[in-house]
Length: 189
Ligand code: SF4
Image (tube, rainbow, N blue to C red):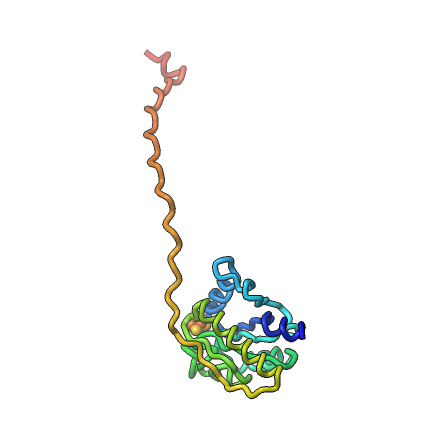
């Protein structure tokens, strides 16, 4: 019972960068920063797919990384959930119809939650993980899961950082001391 409660409230996530421009990855990193502090929800980022409940994928899938993505997904224990972070992971985004791109990650793995945005905002990523955790809970209890979900794009922009305090104007520099003439120059007539 306690284990079930812990699994429901504390999903462990693993991140895989498929073919991202790194924009979405930076936003994911922001989620881990003290500003968004993902861990306050009990969500832990892990490096090993064998320990993870939720797979976060950024970037589109191409012929080269499709096998790696499937491999990461297959290593995760059941039940598991997949979150496509950003439009590239959802549809291929700006890389769609490139000669080597298959499209969104759903071409390779089943997606539970689509997070919109280019890049996806940290608040939307956190919403996506919470939705994925709800689906995980349903799966653990053997209930049907409707999928996929779309995180609404209603997040307000993050507040801008506070302006730095006004700087005190520097005191005017004291007049420079007269430079003493070199001894050789002083001797010349
Ligand atoms: S959705 Fe935008 S920011 Fe994210 S990987 Fe694609 S191009 Fe980059």
